[in-house]
Length: 218
Image (cartoon, rainbow, N blue to C red):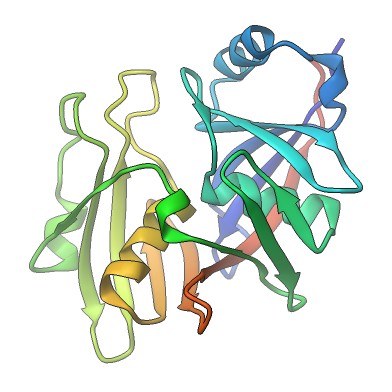
């Protein structure tokens, strides 16, 4: 049987919520891309990561239906689990750091998959949105406090793969930060928290709390 960890990434201050992430620490146990895709689909999380070199931080990321060159919450979760200075993704080398409470990654905005960033007039309007039909990957957001950089957001992948709403999405937060060119505190989903900050070198940091939920076998 293949062992894997389940993390919750971008938890709230109370340690609850966050987006589930499957992590196969021994990537060699499932070497083929088709087998990895099937495993990620079987787990059914929004993303699953396969660690191919824990010392160098080499990771491979999958949704239930797609292989991704880069994704935010898988990188934050992997950085927390591996405690390495960098991660190696298909998109590029991702910087990592920890401040004790938050785990941070630093990445280029153009590494993130395309998202439709859709602004609404109020947080209440975002809260009231129904799940849209499959189609565009939509990141719906509104200011809660523009002066303080506080945002309410919800994410709708639109892939038709069973993930109708994503609880916390680092890549979308990265794109929104790049668009607004300022640090953000994002409340997403049922109670997840994402923090971001543009960096002088053009990269953007994305950070959050991570918790180990369970360690099952498949």
